[in-house]
Length: 150
Image (cartoon, rainbow, N blue to C red):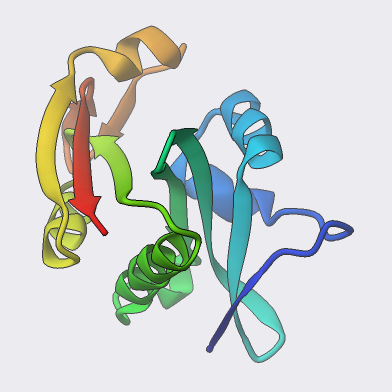
């Protein structure tokens, strides 16, 4: 597997990006302002993440997704660790990420990668998404925020 920055003339892998964020409008908005990286294997894109500068010296991992057939193989952790290294190399001092209260696997992944919980944005997904989102039998209502010093 190889991770690289998406080139300017390439279309972002929208199918993968929408796995992590069902709002096409939000994805298209932040993909324009951020940097998109893809993981390839055998000539196919199997993973993606987007880094978005948010404040001075701070970058947010706003989207991370792995092709469903490739999940459970450690690729998500490799993508998160790659994002951390890219953020460090660009001189950022803090990397942040947020996920839904129902995203049990993602919460565990971010903790394993060294992130700490910094807050909860109550009813984020109720305010920003028109349709209810359910994962693991739990309604996704709140955004759990994480941060890591670089």
